[in-house]
Image 1 (spheres, rainbow, N blue to C red):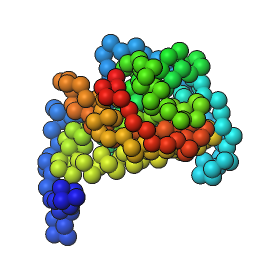
Image 2 (image 1 turned 180 degrees about the horizontal axis):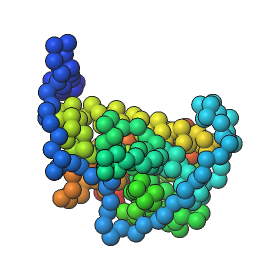
Image 3 (image 1 turned 90 degrees about the horizontal axis):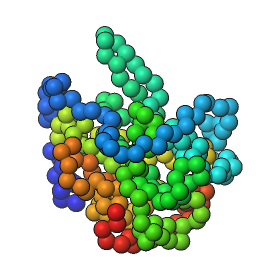
Length: 257
């Protein structure tokens, strides 16, 4: 907790001044808000048009929406309603995207992943995928072994999937400097809420898997690998499904993927 308190003191704004920051924007080093994995197999998702139902307020009442089956279309809608691009803007020759999940400065440090077993119309075996919002597609990062998937899904209700969320801190540090971690956590909260609301519209529940530590989650998502891209820190794993709230804690095997 001493580290947390020290960071808060160093990075907080004051009545007389703002917290220290870069003071300018270096456009030559502007981060790319769209991470892609070159060479990964791409699974395109359905673009789900707006519908009259479910109503907005129904998403906030548990049990109001009947659960839909787990399949390619429902997974598509889960990501389309939570982490996808919602609009494109342009001005003065520049063009940029807006997303369903809000972000400080529209910098979008949050990356999303899907961990799932066999899903009708999507995949025949368990896999770990990165969600690419610009393409509205899943990039297959790895096939999940049977032992790991069984450990992850131990005592889970049927048709449970997992959404992993990570943060690329440099995307916020480029603009906000030492306050970047604050903004990444702020945006992470938006993403968790967006996933929860999108799941509720499908009649599904969500549960934060708080029993998983940083090292376990990094190994599960594959973000612990050495690479030349900006580092990506694991944040949370969210269980999603018709009865996700019933899931209990579990222990994963070492070196999961």
